[in-house]
Amino acid sequence: MAEAMSDLTDTVQVQPEFRLDASREGYIAALTEASSAAPVVAIRMPRSIVDRTVLEAAGLTLELRADGSVAVYADAIDLGTLVSVPLVRLVAEALAQIEPEEAVQELASLVTALEQALALAQQERDRQIPHT
Image 1 (tube, one colour):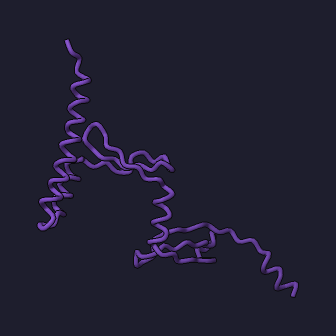
Image 2 (tube, helix red, strand yellow):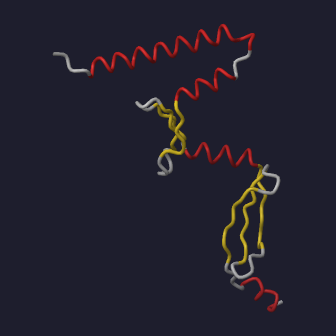
Image 3 (tube, one colour):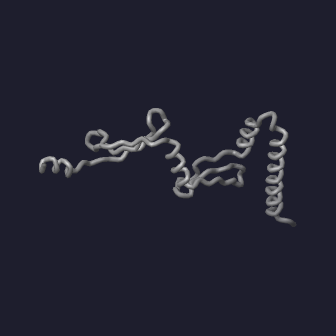
């Protein structure tokens, strides 16, 4: 019995591993032996749960910048801008996805929103121009 107990108290150096599984539908969280890379323990977690948890914790924020781009950054992690896309590209992508039967209503809403945004930008530009 004493011999069996000593096996339980041996120290094994491990290193964490976290990766997508081969199917890309889940993540593998594992502890592997540092000396041999053999897994000591591994757990598979569904990707949907991990992705949602990580994205919620990251606190993603969208920002419309004065240069006409939309940027995404994470409040919880200082990684800078994660991605920046020109607003015109987002509009083009939205237009490409409009279904013909919904085009009239959706286009009217989009045009109204863009006209309001343009009016705000023009007002701010006019306010910034020094008047003589």
